[in-house]
Amino acid sequence: MTPAEPQDLDGALRNLSLCLEEPCVPGELEGWIKAVWEAVERARPLLYKHLTRNHQDHFASIVEEDTEMFRQVTLLKKEDQNILQHFHAVSERVSKLLEKAPRVGPNEAQLHEDVSGLITDGLSFVIQVQRQGIAIRTWLQEAFVRDRGVGD
Image 1 (cartoon, one colour):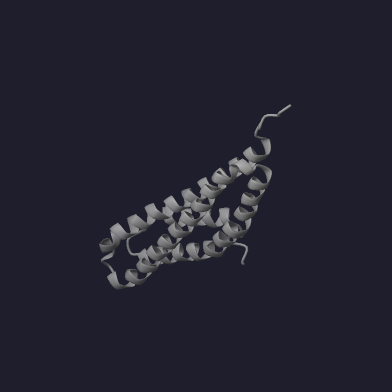
Image 2 (cartoon, one colour):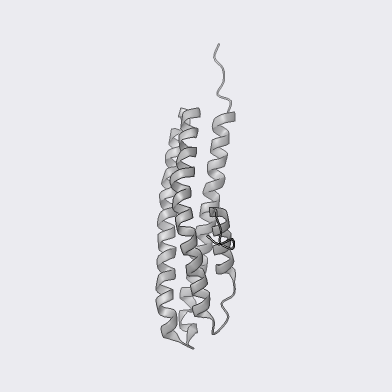
């Protein structure tokens, strides 16, 4: 990785957000969508690594510390699967736009709805991943500090 590329998931998500939030200037659709595609591709391995390593370690720690949180961990695991599905959908949208953009030439307005949908869906994905991270940190902390009562 070059120094300019994100080396963690938070950096990759920040980069993806910035690309999606960048206004798509008329005549620059191809460049804009290529930048979004590159951001998605940089995020891909970081996302998979983060979900398979970090989250799984956290889930194991939560259940090990407090077995009563097994149901909550099950819900968190399900959300990880939803995140992967959402990422796949965003990636597919980007790929389709990458194919369509060169064909429309100066008639970029034809893809306005596609671009708008991608922006909404992509930013929603970023928020979903961030919320999952917050939820995992919250439940991890709860597993370690929750008062379970002491029986005498």
